[in-house]
Length: 111
Ligand SMILES: C[C@H](O)[C@H](O)[C@H]1CNC2=NC(N)=NC(=O)C2=N1
Image 1 (cartoon, rainbow, N blue to C red):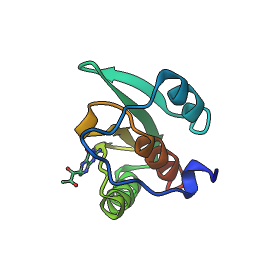
Image 2: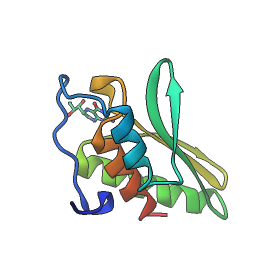
Image 3: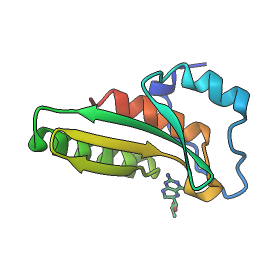
């Protein structure tokens, strides 16, 4: 199977399954710089990206936003001076779908 960074999101349905613990551990190995966090009982992927200043962080933020629009799959983005915190999860299923790992891998390509 092709690498996560070369894949596109599937249209995600409300009845789509969350990844299993085994799938999550396997997928995480392809995006080692991302953490799995628990926010109000829902698993999310999170990574901090560092930049020289606010303007550089803003450029990256806009690139991630364009990727999200292109894939119709949207992150939480925290833009700060020299730092952007990105969180991916699938709202419809309240947790992690394969799509979130694809978007994590594709986000890494933008940094
Ligand atoms: C109507 C629209 O297609 C849906 O709400 C999409 C938009 N972007 C999304 N992004 C994320 N991360 N999860 C979703 O469930 C989701 N659903």
